[in-house]
Image 1 (cartoon, rainbow, N blue to C red):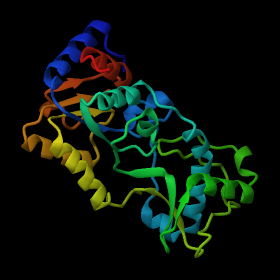
Image 2: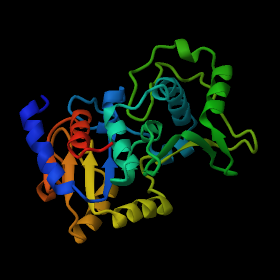
Image 3: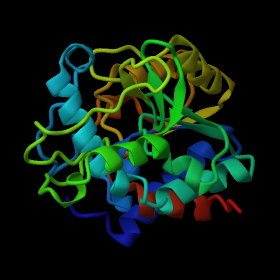
Length: 280
């Protein structure tokens, strides 16, 4: 999908500026804000079909854990090296100037934090931490990566699929992969992310609710709103008659209820919006 022309973007951004000026904004972001950093989108135009790991399969199948950890390690090397793009930096500008309360993100890539945002609710968790499902011990992902490389020296040279949205890159053969275990109790390790089939932790959703409740306006960026959680947050915003601005390539489930919908990429649009609102 082609980006808007400069004149069309200027008109759309001016409409958004009129709606948002003088209001405290809560941002809600999805995978589309990270595509310009080289992380693909599950559902964006041109994205390949993908099947996320199911929590039941992960916990009950050793083969599933081999596939997950092998792919996760290969991808994490590239995933963790990604840098914030203009979308993340523009949102950080809004927060730094006091015009935004923070950002609620569906992404696990940590790029909002890298860009300088301080108030970030990571709805789906973070790839930075690893947790034992038995004893609750928390490990740094970098330490687990070192262990994986020492027990699987063949892995980095094995052919693999392209990087996926959650930082996975599946090798062609994972049968020989040695799965890392908890060094405290020998239990199953998992990243601190919400797997398919799991619910977002209540306290995390409550943090997101609190940000929406304190906001005067909502900006949704880079998500088609097919996931239930942001829809629930927007329902709460609608009950308070908060204006909602949506920036996303392609349609979303909330387009007809938005005060402004901008069908364009997030990087150029958020930069232009920050400039138009004279955000420092």
